[in-house]
Length: 322
Image 1 (tube, rainbow, N blue to C red):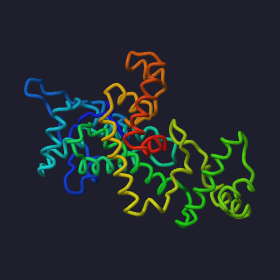
Image 2: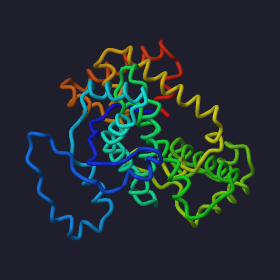
Image 3: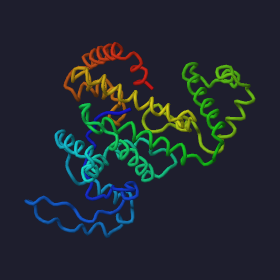
Image 4: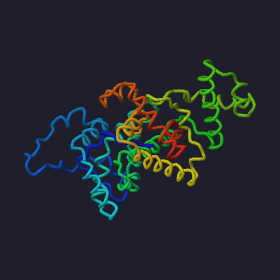
């Protein structure tokens, strides 16, 4: 799921043609300079200690540039649809900062941040390839879902210190998630019997599944600032089925179409309240500050927008909350 965000900055230089992802971390050949600007001086500090830090170098490389205007983005997207590889490259470069802003929320996972950024960039490339500017939303709106999906899959595949068979990983995911949800409901740690009853397996099997992961990493370890945990990132085999992935993408597109029918202020409230822009969901107070309105007015706008979304597509509210 996704939305628009300020984190779109142009990278200095980054070839993303053919095997695009392999070149996302190449150092720039040169820094673009506008015709009316003086030639920039070399940055001697790059030869210092910071040059040994790949992450700092990467941040420096993508940190220079300006936001694309909506008109510029639409024009590049139109050219991309006509097969213009340079336009596609520019769209990717101008959204690399969005990948950075999203992957920062996953830095507590046991995977190097730079690896996650590269995985997120793969999602961004895929989003650019499928982006339809005619829907009226910014690319960052559409790309966030693809970036999060790529990062989450990378965490699930790389972040665990042990490997489990797929069917066992499914069971572990179910047990740990059930334990967490029951704990929230009961305000205490649930017993093995309670977990087993909820899932429909024996208490002994619950214990066996918990023992499998106990020594590797706590599956209740929070990921980022939200309510997600490592357990949520153990891959679900259903995600390997193309028809399920297709349904997810269709639902994301359905959400974008539904949001387009809301009033601009209602749309902005939903985007910020549910974190559709790649940032954590904002509180009523934070949204109110951003829009210059009261907390109560934000609550009213959110309630009205959700009612309209229910009328347009009843399943969308559940999709927003998951």
